[in-house]
Length: 442
Ligand code: PXG
Picture 1 (cartoon, rainbow, N blue to C red):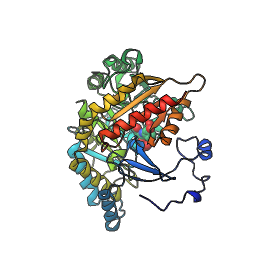
Picture 2 (cartoon, rainbow, N blue to C red):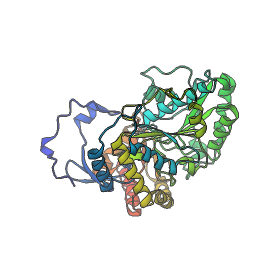
Picture 3 (cartoon, rainbow, N blue to C red):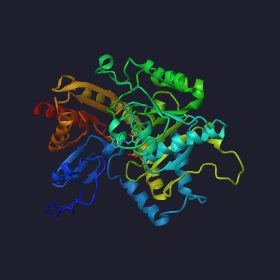
């Protein structure tokens, strides 16, 4: 791997205002990753760190894939950038055609963005424009779910349900939320989809009774809540949401930024759960995380409703300078080829039984109050220390690194979501390391 980094010549840390980071704490005790290949990062001391989180849930095919690097290099020297407004370039069409082939049934009209947050705001705007185009411009209300994470745009934080991401900012008007599905009393240590909680989808009926269906544009949920700590949907829940939306002309949006591209053993969670939304937001694994890219998949009905009016008129006043960026498309196409040629979605499915067993073996480890899993994602929830919520989770992150494994800690929940190339041995190592860490801390 990289031999060029000089530990004694660390960069100046002051200028970079780091995202979602305790900047002062980090800069007092920095942790730098300097290279990566396959399942491993390397830190600034040259130590290998097993990637238990696919970076930030994005490097599903593992790191430093030469096929992607070559495709990116070739595209840079062929067509590095071209405008996508009123002009086109072949690879954006090729890429969306390839995406359409793995899309859930009918979701084959695809708008390209550069991130999950942009995908979410794009999908919310498409939902509003759809209703307006159909003469229902009064449908402006957006419904999210408690504990939801939909990125950091104003639309995304409005429908999101994580208080710290919302409280310092203003939000879009009129939004509302259904309850989350976290119910440890009834569903503690559930394996895969929990048995209880489908009825929480009926919260949507209550909001309809409160606000009137004719004011509601869309409902957005993560099929499996990711950032909130891996909350698989209760059995029957997504089906019920789908049915209520159908009965009331409300669009259903699945935010598959984490669940997309194989995390649950199918290309998308919509396919794993056999529930098809009207719009689906994606990013992250779409390029194996190597270049910024996102995509919103729309049903024909949603798309076609907007393809009206004079042919010379722009149908949707929305888009980004880098929508369909040719180099990101090249990375995406090469990524899809790897997913397909290596059968990585299938391997996620094939590994998921071992994964579940390894995760739930931690049930009796110290501090553990819940374990949740589905596909190749899992969360191990720890009891918070009295007076110091989050401290235990953070210590697990630090001790994990010392032991050569990267975990993701949000508050006191430890999340694991390794690249889909993970081996059974590496799965064993992830969870045995976590056990060792839990046994070593207060
Ligand atoms: N939707 C969902 C469901 C996400 O998980 C976003 C939207 C926003 O994507 P961008 O590309 O704008 O960041 C996300 C992002 C974590 C973690 O560990 C999760 C995300 C990002 C960073 C960390 O929980 N999810």
